[in-house]
Structures are given as C-alpha cells and as structure tokens.
Image 1: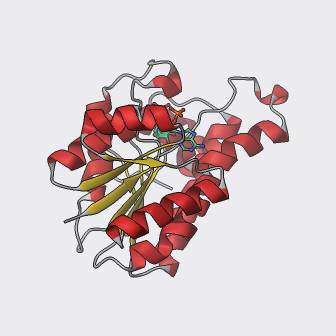
Image 2: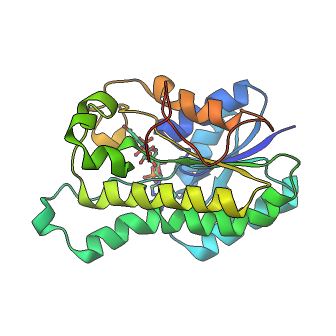
Length: 235
Ligand SMILES: NC(=O)c1ccc[n+]([C@@H]2O[C@H](COP(=O)([O-])OP(=O)(O)OC[C@H]3O[C@@H](n4cnc5c(N)ncnc54)[C@H](OP(=O)(O)O)[C@@H]3O)[C@@H](O)[C@H]2O)c1
C-alpha cells in the first residue's frame, strides 16, 4: 500500500493528481486548508481528508500527527499547495506581498517537509514532489529566447516566479541532503485552474501527468531533477 499526502488537493492540479493516484491504488490524504472544501473533495475522490494550512506550523504538525496515527509512514509527499499572488506591476509589489506568496509557495514546503520528514523516513522508498513552475526557472527567465521554446506563457511575475525559483533551490538541497528520499521539482505546464482564472491552455488531467509520473517513478526514479511534461526543464 502506498500512502500519499497531497497539499492543496481540494481543487485544480492537486485534486486531479489525487484522483489519478487513487485510480492507481494509492491511499491518498487529500490536503485542504478549509475543512468543508476538504471533506467535499475527499468524498468525491474516495480520499482521506487532511486539514492542512501550509502557512501554519500548528496546522501542519496536527496533519502529520493525524497521518502518523493512521498510517505510520508516508511514501509520497506532494507539495502542491500554491498561490499566484497579487497581479500588480512590479513597482507596486511590496515586500509584504512577496512574503505572503513565499509563506505558501516556499516556507509552506519547508514546514511540510520538515514536519513530515520522520514519516517519510519511516517509508521504504520515499519521495517528495515539489510542484514548481517553468516560471521559476532562472535559465528561462534570464533568456528571452527560452521563453517561447520552454515556457510559452512566460510572464515576469516578481513574487510567483521568484518563489518557484526558491522552491527549486530547496529541491536541489533536499535531494542532496536526504539521499534516502527522491526529491524532484515538476512543472505541470500552463493549466486551466483557479490559479490563473482558467486561462491555462491545457486541462488539469494533462497538467497532473508529470506530477503523477514523478510520484510513481518508484525506487529507481530520479532525484534532484526538474521535470516538465516532455523533458527536463533547465534550472
Ligand atoms: N495552473 C498552472 O498553470 C500551474 C503551472 C505551473 C505550476 N502550478 C502550480 O501547481 C500548484 C497547484 O496549482 P493549481 O493551478 O491547481 O491552482 P489552484 O486550483 O488555485 O489550487 C491551489 C491549491 O492550493 C491550495 N492552497 C493555497 N494556499 C494554501 C495554504 N496556505 N495551505 C494549504 N493549501 C493551500 C488551494 O486551497 P484553497 O482552495 O483553499 O485556496 C488549492 O487547493 C501550485 O503550486 C501552482 O503554483 C500551476
């Protein structure tokens, strides 16, 4: 039995990832920061509801304790919860705006990894999937020619892009420091979800494919990589 925890699974890519992993036989803890939305999603999915707000230490600790009591170990942690941040021009964005985005997209992953670490280390072949974005690639952001070829919907979002770059760095360092855990970042691609007002050009099913593939890569799967739908993304 594979036990998988997904943060932000009440909708969008997290929900679709949960749906696919349940189809593949995983026991999925579908994370939600809102109890009612979480219960509804878990019921629709056949998942176990997990109340978890990744910006709140106590919420993350309570979630890990609930999973520890029921399952004892976590095989796969999908750090999927994410926010886009305010759609403001760069000159109007404050440090507080960035802090709010980082609190979910960066510090949320740190809180969750740190708190779930003992449960991951209790599994035979644990994995962490960080749901990043091509918008977090320094290589892509620094090279206008790469925008069109690698991230066609590239947009210079100061808070979001930099938060995903930080998540990528966390991925590299966690992969090095926890050799017993496969840690990878993935880019789902531009997907129609609430995050972008459903402007994305692909479906949640298409976007979730790389998350599912990385979550199910098994003990011989890669670690310390940044994977897109069809190819690795340059850091
Ligand atoms: N859509 C794209 O084109 C795209 C592309 C690349 C990467 N991504 C990444 O994919 C991930 C999922 O995004 P999505 O497109 O599926 O967006 P979405 O539909 O808006 O889903 C985001 C999920 O994260 C949850 N969340 C937000 N803040 C949270 C917090 N503090 N604690 C726990 N959960 C929280 C949301 O919960 P609520 O319902 O309570 O708000 C929701 O369940 C994000 O990390 C995003 O950056 C998306």
